Amino acid sequence: MSHEASEPETPHLDFQGTTPYEDYVQADVLTHLQHTLSDDPGEMVFLVTTQVMELWFTVIVHEWETAARSLREDRVRVAVDALKRSVRELEALNASWKPLGQLTPAQFNSYRSALGEGSGFQSAMYRRMEFLLGEKSASMLVPHRGAPRVHAELEKALHEPSLYDEVLRLLARRGHPVPGSVLRRDVSRRYEPSEAVEAVWTDIYSGDEHAELARLGEALTDVAELVWRWRNDHLVATRRAMGAKAGTGGSAGVAWLEKRAQKNVFPELWTARSHV
Image (tube, rainbow, N blue to C red; front, side, top):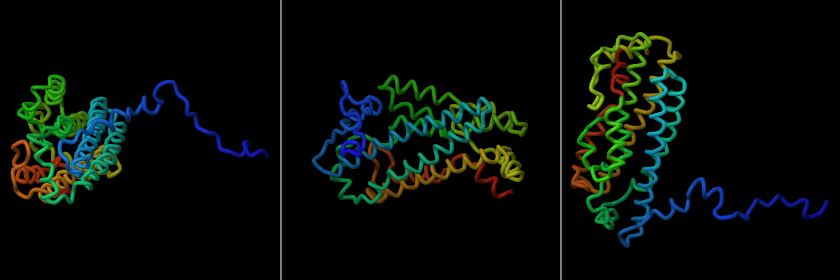
């Protein structure tokens, strides 16, 4: 056997123009979006980590919109698959705190001024995540008035049923006594817990744990738990980096994050467990 014949095949190296990988991933665009504003080497880590978070927000919004649409079409299995994918993506999103989770005040202060009035609560894609979870607030559109496309997308999301609204409508179609006041509520407003909805979940969880709606409930609970962990990791990282000082962009900083961390996502899924 010749030496040439025993060599592994060389991959195709000669392309006209950019590589197919570049055409698909657009890595050159992604890796040239980092424009630091200070001389501190730690700012690069902060900037890239924040950009990575934005990409994960985008993926998760896609999954939850897929789940909401599938529930509207009574395709529960497709919805559960999307929710399960989002759980793995939320785990990756939460791991994004690792590079930032141990910042000291001195380290953060070395490039904090580069943020100016910038703050994470201004993230439009994160806001879309919150809207899908039922955390609606028209006032959160205000920071985006200067970006017509972004503002229009957020306004559309504000007035569409949340993921949980679609879940409750599905439960009603399946014969569960979800109150009409819940089904007809103004979906542009924040979802408020209902004792009647709690009773519905209690009934579902008191039955066959392998039933389709029980599995849907557990997929939603997995999502809710990881969202809670995201909020708490954000709180801890912020408290460690800046204590109780006012946040960037005029936010209340730790005080605002503490309030957010106390809120349960899909609240009746948690309270119903006390009655099973």
